[in-house]
Image (cartoon, rainbow, N blue to C red; front, side, top):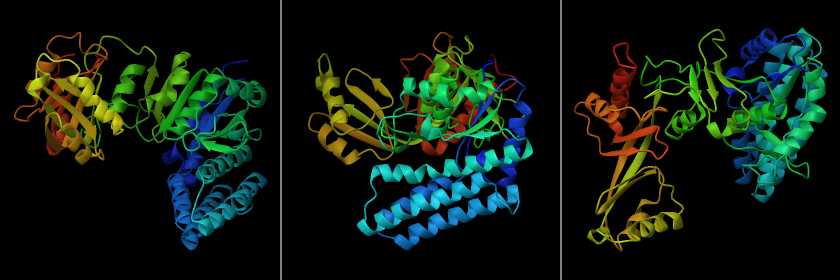
Length: 458
């Protein structure tokens, strides 16, 4: 059996009937005789948000609102089905729509009556969009070239019972994939399944949380030992900067996994690297491609990537807050840092960047951190200064720390922009600069010009 190809399509790629037809064309174009293709599909764009909103409305006792949202979503799928498949719908689509009504309506009514929505019921609602969208695509593919199969991912992606953020069981997934997917893929078929959803040991539906569809593609790709996993989205791979801020940003051809992780942590939103780790660890290449420009450029993410780049890409995140904690007693003392971070740990606050001097520790926290509680507790043994509305701009590259002059070049490029904090990550591939949020876009443009323009040195 030839290793299969895995193709994952996100919500922006399956937003409506023309986009679904485009996806079907991409699948057929990449499908080769004798090699199976596993298609992992997200819900139609915005569908999962609408389902979650319906569940929350029901939990507040707003039955009419909840049922209205759900009915509107069903009507959207019905119209998309007719646009894609014509007035007479295949049995697979009819059954998917009927199952949605049968499964979801009683839950919404019950939740509205009790003003409570259990986590397991919330997962059943939230995961319905993938079952509907995948039925549409499978029916369309089968209509054009009979033989496309639809498989319920809940029978393959086995997880624990942490509803909303379920943890997969890799061994159970491999066994289920061998039973349900490999026989079809071994025959060279196109198999359509869903991202984001799974089931626990009691067959109760679960969802995988943030980046769930990418995670599903990686888990399934690892389970079937795929040749490649393609993540199809609406950009040409991972870019050297945010294109909304830096119009001249360009795709990175090859990206190391560690670089991808750092970029995601500091604001790049193409994918979350933790979701592709199962595939990367097995050496399966993951490519990020644009479904609207299939012949365009793309990024390949691997465990090693390419070595020797001082700066691979930029990322930025904000608003953040800088807390500077000062105490003369810190000089020559021990245990001061432990005392500081015990406060952050007890209040459940994650710290991103840390910079220290003899008597001061500066840290950054994300928006929403309990600043008053932090200030109150830290002030019992130190002076605390809080500076809000800041942003971090990160330069990421696998040879950043080993390349002389990078920090100086970065600071020189910023001209009159004031850099309030500098941190070189322990990973050695991330140089982070904290600036005012208002000037962060300009800082990104200047840094991109310095490191990625035609005149910039390599």
